[in-house]
Image 1 (tube, one colour):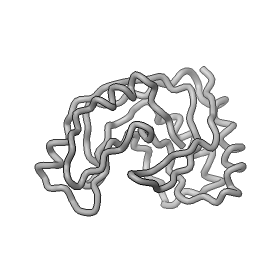
Image 2: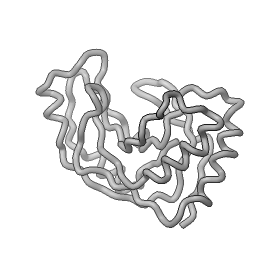
Image 3: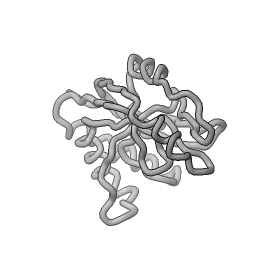
Length: 173
């Protein structure tokens, strides 16, 4: 499940001064999103069940949602360069609760939601400390209204992943 930034946020992300670094593959503008729950490989025949389960969420959430990105870039471990995302915790919990009967939680307990927008991934080898430090802490702050979320399929492609929206769910508020 994904929440997509609005156009002004996408334009600001596109101007983020990340440069190029050997061993770091930047994530392109068409794939910037905040993941609400990663489901992994799901059989196509389970998609209608997921859609039905997710259809119950918009009625459960009170008010309008805002996603706040920032205040700067940071690393998840050694491989994922990201911008923290806040404000979607209730939506992520609702998604997890609705989808767990269809796609069970893979670990007990399931890791807590750690909202973020990925901007780059280390490739093949570990980036050296200097390269990692130069990409962490780049200021970026934005916020955008969230009026929907998508069930997406993710497929490998060149140069990165390709996301296809399978269903969109509109929030009330």
